[in-house]
Length: 82
Image 1 (cartoon, rainbow, N blue to C red):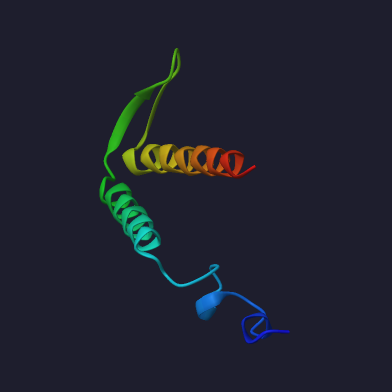
Image 2 (cartoon, rainbow, N blue to C red):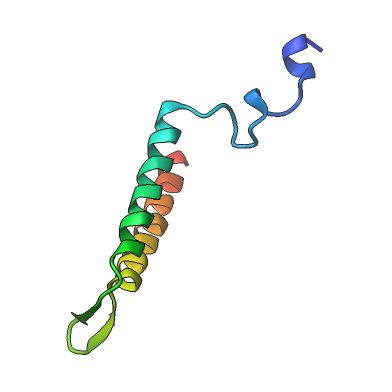
């Protein structure tokens, strides 16, 4: 067994598969800024999706769209890896 193989685990020991790369830092920063933006917008808004119109806090609508975006992004990244 070579010294490289003896470490067993990931490089850097962060538990994320390696050290924090600039791209990971950028993604984390964008996600944090998006969440701050979402929770700063708390007023009531009317949202219409096809026929029904609902009144809800803007942060809930933005959070829902953020979650849908994260799910879609994760799906396409996972498909690209196969």
